[in-house]
Length: 269
DNA sequence: ATCCAGTAAT
DNA sequence: ATTACTGGAT
Image 1 (cartoon, rainbow, N blue to C red):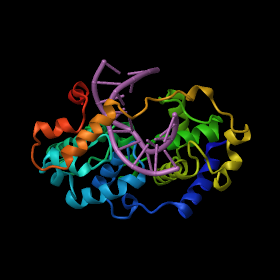
Image 2 (image 1 turned 60 degrees about the vertical axis):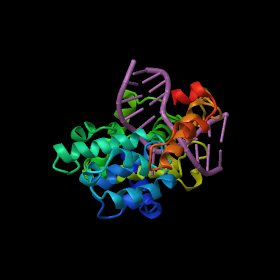
Image 3 (image 1 turned 30 degrees about the vertical axis):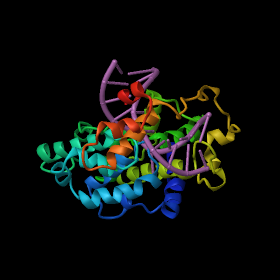
Image 4 (image 1 turned 180 degrees about the horizontal axis):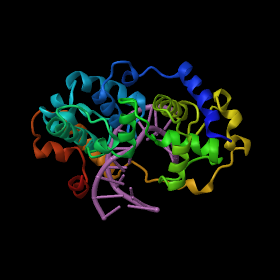
């Protein structure tokens, strides 16, 4: 099947059913897109919305954030998770302020050098903020390509060369169409071609889908379990961070100690 | 219990 | 190529 046959149906579907999100509005600049993409790393849209609004309202440019403290950045991060992202976004703002005249760089290679900006985020900002033709390969696009073209339910944990080649092959040749295809494929994966309960009855390419044609085979290799949450170091850290966020002044040790009873575990956190 | 718009260190 | 990192919803 030629890759191009999926473009029209997916792009038309997106034109009709895309969610209206603040970072997709006309007039957003590179900074808005960068902030949103970093917040969206491993974090669902619903939880990002409120924090995104307060961030761009308080720091409308990289230089504005750079002139504030990293501590404020973490405070404003709220409970989004992975608070190191707030530190890296602040560090990225400092780099942009110092080395790029306060303007978010436009090329993939320059973006990739910023703290906290990996392959996905660099490609996404280059495409969505600056309309460049880049392969945007997030978990949603990976799942769509895996199902439609390869007939496999879920992609592997890591991206392999074959997968990148397929994504490059499927990407439309001209930049504007490539950008629209990328955002449309991401949206399709996020709201229709979901990991757990795909809504194939409303999918614009269900008739072309290899996975569907094969009868939805599942792979047994992806059923390993994860560590539970209660009582772990992870829960301990989360509780301590919430406590520290709540205060403007350094906290007495007694108060911190009271938040978690297991001493050694508290020290680790 | 498992999912969700990844990055960076190893 | 693997793995730790986060928190809330389902």
